[in-house]
Image (cartoon, rainbow, N blue to C red; front, side, top):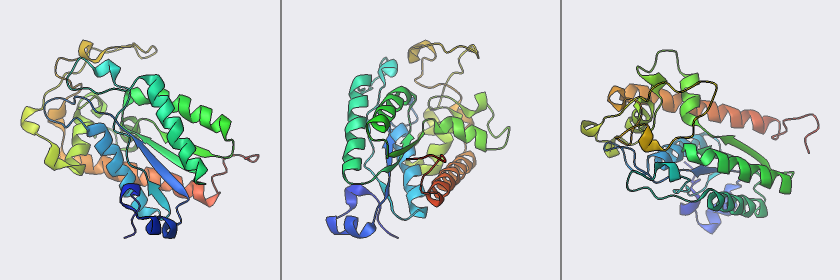
Length: 252
């Protein structure tokens, strides 16, 4: 199997790898309850990225960005957060670095809700700055997974939640050695308005550092999530490759 992880590549292997695409994982370091590790958001997204790259030669996986915008989780120790403007600046610098090396097909795989807005701003600004670059983003795999799986796969709150049924299930599939199910507990927040978005601080929703019900997590659910997400991303990238990432009749 070819090596695609940038941090383990030698200069020789990088040259011979003929990398034309890169996956950038953006995660976080924050509390995920007593049963999941602080690096859950990074671990899940990075493991998915590596599984994708295994199937698509010429895809470089960058070292994950393990700090995100987590100010709204800061009530629970030990949250380490970047300010939004810091994360935007870091993302733009990483994207510019790739572009300088003629890697202009970039897939951003996000693992944390607080990163969505900074990623959007950074990617839009870089696209305007470098019109020929192609940037695609999966900003919420936890939402996508629910749409890909059969109805009623999850038992509580559609599997959603920070450290909840879905996230715990996928960790059981990817890194079961890091999960302590004996300490799993969570809370489903009271129903929030569907047409409006309330800007909460996480401790307003739960006293456990977890929303949803991680006790309903299973290995089988996690395996289904991994398979569905990896297949979804792989198919997307292959489809884009077939048309050289041209998504418009008038693409530059």
